[in-house]
Amino acid sequence: MLDTSKVRRPLVLGTVMASMAMIAIEATIVSTAMPQIAGQLGDLHLYAWVFSSFLLAQTALTVVFGKLADLYGRKPVLIFGCAIFVIASVLCGFAWSMPSLIVFRLLQGIGAGAIQPVGMTVVGDLYSLEERGKIQGYLASVWGISSVVGPFAGGLIVQHLDWAWVFWINVPIGILAIVGFQLFLRETIAPAERSVDYGGAILFTLAIAALMTALTETGTTGGVMPALAAAAAFLACAGAFVFQERRAKDPMLDFGLWSKPSIAAVNAATLFSGMSVIGLTTFLPMYVQGVLGQSALIAGFTLTVMVLGWPIGATIAARVFPRFGLRRTLLFGAALLPFGAVPFLLLRPGMSPAIAALGSVVMGLGMGFLSVSALMIVQSAVEWRERGAATASNIFARNLGSTLGAAALGAVVNFNLLRAADGGTPIDLDRVRHLLDRAEGFAVDQATRDALGSSLHVTFWAIFGIAVLTLLLAVFVPAIRHGQASAPSEGKGETREGMDIVAPAREA
Image (tube, rainbow, N blue to C red; front, side, top):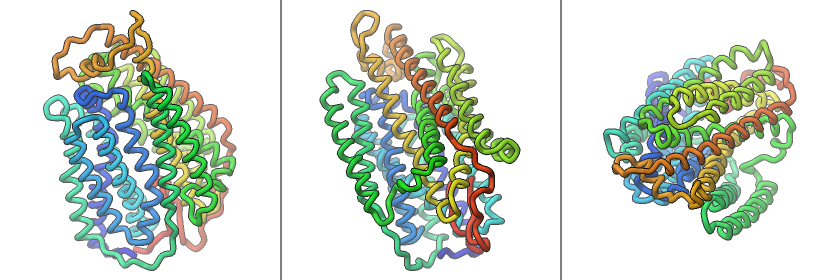
């Protein structure tokens, strides 16, 4: 149980906000800087792994760290997460190759998997239901500010400083967060009997890593046998994971919950929406800089409008769904995704980046409508006692979609770069690397720029197809009347849609 002193609470909240800021900024600042980083480190075919490794670790360990926080307390888990994130950020700045950066990004993901869910839980422990509306606004402001600061900071850093500062900017924030949790967070740990599904988390990580490897190798020359071996490993690990989850006392993934038609349909749509958005976040900066020839700052702007559109769409959705219903709100958001993807299909060399920004803001609005309505649908589809697991399943689906989307769409780029170009010769990835790393002053022929543009254009078509599939899956979501699920009795719990978690209310 936490010390809920009203003098101490603002200090703890400020510390939680600082720890969240590291993750929020990292989500956008790396996307903007990655073309230059890949240009210097090489191994362009591993580009998407820089994003996927972070998301994989975060997705697999979020549930594990949540349970560890119940067993051993919030404070040690948060301090551990911040320490890992800071150490990994320092190592990322010293990365000497793309594989080393991928490993260090995976460590960052481990830290993020501890910080985000447990930080939200601390807020639920400290503040009553009546107070949380204001507190959620504070936490949302962290993501809103970071969505503006991150892309522009990334653009400024790669233009005027070493790219390592993209990662090192987290270090002072993380150190302050560790000190803050140590000084201000007080708790009495009550005995808890929770079973942590370590086996499930390990098997899940191995299965998804094997699938990502298969996708990556499929898009490279001579990668048929490694891809087949990775696919076999995926099938073996996936089978073992299913067996483990069916026998685990407290499984990482509750198959019974996912078998409910409404939750299955909503989570499937959420998974594919995550794939479409991560594709845009990962590869749009590469197109704007490498093909349109714009600066990293302009590339950051094309992402900023997307992450600004997201909270705007979410705010509007929260206001309009009582009138139009959750299903219609979800369908509207899902329809905005393919509509927003159309401008990317029209992009050509020499066009204004404003076209890309237009598509970004529409897709951001769509994700805002879809994410809020999807979360409320899964929460309304179950009894109160299952809402925590239902909410976690929706977050898990979105994170998993992002993880797989980055790998799958990266394979699309690699395959199209390495297939025969106009002259019948595959494009040398070193030429693409020099194109992205314009600091070297390497004169890149137009054929390389055209090949990159063509490859990314195919990726944009893939994003459009995934967005259409998201809409089709949303059509199968059954209508759920708002307030259908039974409410918690005697004020013992409540749904916290804005926080993406459910927890019992605690008196302040």
